[in-house]
Amino acid sequence: MSLRANHFELFDLQITYDLDLADLTQRYRELQRVVHPDNFANASERDRRLSMQQSTQLNEAFQTLKDPLWRGRYLLQLQGLDPNLETATAMNQQFLLEQMELREELAELTQLAPSLAKLNQFITHLIQKMQTLTQTLSQQFAQNNYSAAGDTIQQFQFFKRLHQEALALEEEQD
Image (cartoon, rainbow, N blue to C red; front, side, top):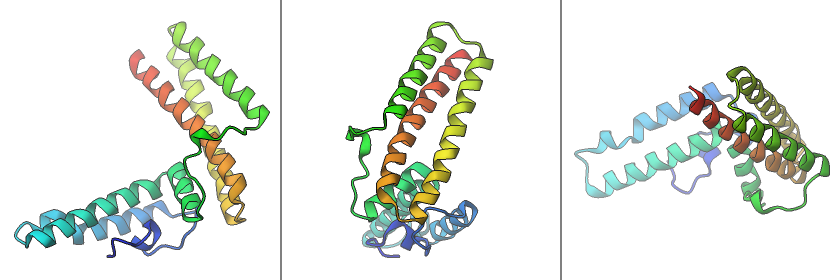
């Protein structure tokens, strides 16, 4: 296993947005069994360090590739595009309005001591939006439309952050 390999190469996968997550998980477990530091407890310091580096690299690659948002960001990075899109300012007006409305809705849910039913409905809506964005990214990457994928990733990041905030609010309600 090369420390210079990209995440897809580590798992001997084609560079694509659409991955079989069960296959990825199986490949991860197989590789982790080989390089895990516990296997090198009695090895030389160099071999233990290399094992730790490889295990860390595998963990990072697995976490990146299994998450649809992070996988999309990584694919943009492989194309030489900036995956740190939080700073991008050019956004679709409709999406900006939707952002404001959803933020207001979450704020209302926060202030009104929400019923779990309304909060769950809000969370379900966000999950559906993220699933739609995952499908959109699949199509955009299949067409090598990286500019559009960048815009979609920017939207995805918003929905993921909002989803995390809603889950935190749900946890507070329990």
